[in-house]
Length: 341
Length: 237
Image 1 (tube, chains in turn brown, blue):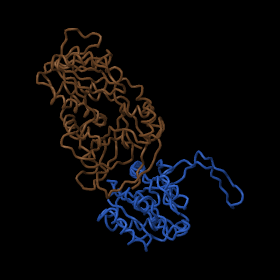
Image 2 (image 1 turned 90 degrees about the vertical axis):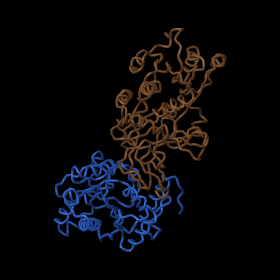
Image 3 (image 1 turned 45 degrees about the vertical axis):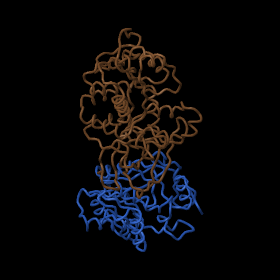
Image 4 (image 1 turned 45 degrees about the horizontal axis):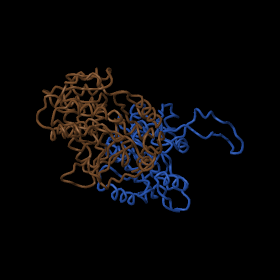
């Protein structure tokens, strides 16, 4: 079967290319229905990556956050019309110790190979997770992002000591918002603080116990553990502020992506015996946990619905450009593409 | 019920230096017709896919399908008729005999030599045929169309803004198509080479579905070269 693939061939230029899908290879043929734009996609689209990276990665179909519908399963385990979340991480080997999302050999859609801007995608059955029709599809479109937050929290749960009276999240963007929703639900007894730079965004964190501007944190406020969801240039002052406000032997979870090296106060990390760990991407287990969370927590799904910014009906390549241009101006929230191309 | 009808009845007389009907030429790793059939085979709403092949090629087509899709009871190969419309009627006859024909029977008919058809085009065809009874897939005309009655002098140049180029699928309420076709005289049948024209001539509305330029018909050797290039492969003469 011939498949249409919508690839970014150079910054701000999307062209349709064609490839063959061979059903005899086995797998589940899915049709993307709801797609969400990630900052990483936007950076490729705008050409905000180094010349070397762009030369290596492009042409490539963007988008790795995808809700899809099963069209045909060569094994017959999935039914046509089943709604599934697609997992962009694609391991190529087994490893008992290193998780699938950290293996150097794993490939990632819209980074190492084509993302989901395609007419059909042939997925291996372990790369899709069924999700109930009851979950709002616009929210389900960014399950991948939620699963990244779920992954950070799962790792935190294994790494951090058991005293969890107070947790602070730095970052009032999408990752901070989602992480705050998950922590407030998964750890109902924790006093949850959210710190950010924007009063208007912080006012939306109604489920947190307290929100504060980063300039207003009292000197004597001490937290058991901290989550960094800032990324970019802002993560340096954020991490150093965490180090100042964390109790001894606390854990700092790093979740924001920075293009540059970050100078942090390692002397104080040593002095307080802190644990600092990083997380990136997510694997099947995180997706399964996230889907279960979305299916069973209606209130939290409603909170997540407030993140849905503009939605675009995509019938032409021009519509894709409009969606990316609009997304660029978004201060908070997710741009969702309704895929009808 | 909704049925896919893949029209592969032509013998490809325009294909040039090859004796193989054009729909059986290989594009990428498979014959063109298999690429096309697979598109309809995987589409969940189709109850059955009926492939109309030249009589001599029926068994050959069945073998190709088996090789590509394994044993399946979702696809049948039927011999085509002497004209495109007769071929269509063979498909309707097949449906009538095996499933019965009722007011909700929809057929989505498609040229075997248009393997670049997309999910959206098929989806919109089914929706339009259900709502309007008939639809045609088209793209806006890009070349100026010139009409000449005698082939020597221009008789008129129609306004391009109102002109579209017809592609496939063409989709219909099968019962209505059959009734309209049977009401034609033999003389009318001879000149009506397009099923949508039957509807239009009888005053029935035919809805337009937006096609894609890429949904090209592989008619000439040049087209096969273009198609192979689109797929990113090399074309061997």
